[in-house]
Image (cartoon, rainbow, N blue to C red):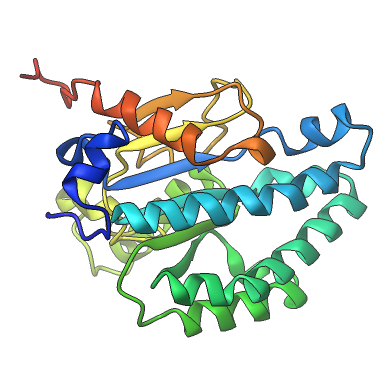
Length: 253
């Protein structure tokens, strides 16, 4: 698919990017917010607040580059185990973000969507989230997908349960179950293949994120903590991706 971007080919090349080797779908595990705040002697929530700037700049640049989707690990199903006060503050931050960033999303033609068990989020966060998703529904540029109350194992188990119920009800022959059918039972059946997974803060774990979707994704890590992640760091990841030889289980080129 041809890129739709305000940057000319010459501009992209001048920035060290290879237009034909840009990923279509990038996902990011935004790690290091609490560590960044702790190093400065602040409460952990301050790191998450500062991380909003990183989200904004990364989203805008991915939109300008003409990527199809950016998926951000915003709140995992395991994050409920954090201190109650921190969880409450994170939900308030989410509610504020999805309202305050509406002009940015609309200006950049970004379609907002989610992945995860968002129905169980607190109403004060869920309602503004749904309103923002609806507001951006007809935008045709980058899809910004927020993973909220999300777990990769949880997603796969849910898909298996849905298929099992269909089989038990006689609506599905178990022998017809294959990868494509299971993929259509995931949270986002239309999610494009994941090309590049970025993790900040120097960690190398996938942390139960998009376990099905990352099967053939390239992984790039950076020691940069998420509140300090900016466009030059994004470009480092994109350049590293362009140098990879993607084999998909074969011998490659």
